[in-house]
Image (cartoon, rainbow over all chains, first blue to last red; front, side, top):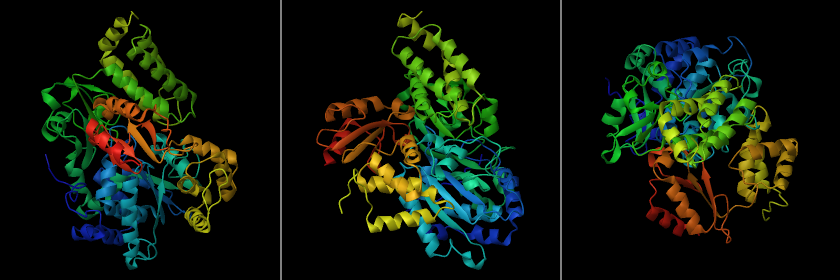
Length: 419
Length: 162
């Protein structure tokens, strides 16, 4: 397995966020190459690289770009989703703070590919420090003629507007993000039309995750074949795993997507704290169904985790040791979905609230024996019936926590007299 | 000019910033969140009067602005403390003791989550994931993240808030 570092290669350098250091390490050389390429050739290179969106959905980046209507004179927008919010995920914060110019260069190349001249970077409101550092990098890029009019004599114009969110998980959903960017509450929109046809301000729009765009300059510089070769047959590259919970060394780990969950926990993060045993792992942010300790010999690519009945999602890995109460963990997760449901679709708005109440009463020892089946029934009925994927994301933990740890829930209900 | 959330009026400098922000978007309404951030920084919180004032700057209805303000967690509709302490209570922080941190803060400050101390020094919140799980348990203190919290570290931070 390769130990190649792409995203984190500069993280250890002091001032890695500055233009000077970025240029010293080869930064902005891919941009020159991209200016010599036809836009369609850039998109084709992304397709060949098997780069898949690293925000959560795992969709082919090149394919997404190719959905932009050809030959249209309408303005097109590039939007960076830096509204990191999936519980257990923190890698975009590292990129914004430690390699902001890689994001800017990736944006420029993406903009050239989709022929956009205006980009928005939507940064979650709580990320004040990342916002300041990224804003500084954008200022530097303007001063160096890397943004604005006729960039480096190419005849290509591109501007970046940095937009701060104001606290709402749903704005990480691409159409919710677009609503928010338009000055509205962050309600997701029904698809189709997809944003590539009708997105921000009614114009064709591509929304890409921070890390996805940070990969782009490397792919242009070193080629699609190289990037594809780092991963599995269906997903190229390395990616950033955010590992937290009961591991010895929590943090951002860069690894090829072919790494197994066991290797990630035991080889890269030092195993479980205090000599305890592993109980469960959430492998891809809180919306990913939970895995038990004996299900961790899976590769961490999109398809590997899908085949294991869970998902790669945002690659936020939350590790739980044997002391953890799964019903309590479900209550915490259910509280999150109840709080963050935007309220637009009835199944989501109602179910998230009621399921949180039921999870809460189970933990309080007031659970009823029918509660578990009621939660499972409500969860399964609502899945797939809503405008966006938020509720499907909530259903993942509801069902998997209960089905995989049912004995623990039932014991808790019995001990509270609910049997 | 004093900034009064009950009689809001931006100074010339802020009005210039409002126009600059509005000019950045294909439709000026895109600048609503940035301008609400500016209004909160200027007036301390987003009162109903601030909502009406901001609506006027955009040609929007006050109802639209109210809908937006109440949708997001970072806009305060009541005066807040000089400092805002927001403890993450989501999964990774929960696993590593968020509840103990919240209990310590409510006891030391003598308030419940969601309240502000009588002297206006601190507003205490518990919030969803702030995406700094590698430092769990963690919290946000005004603009900065404070992680790997212990009882001692929380004491130190509290003492530093004036």
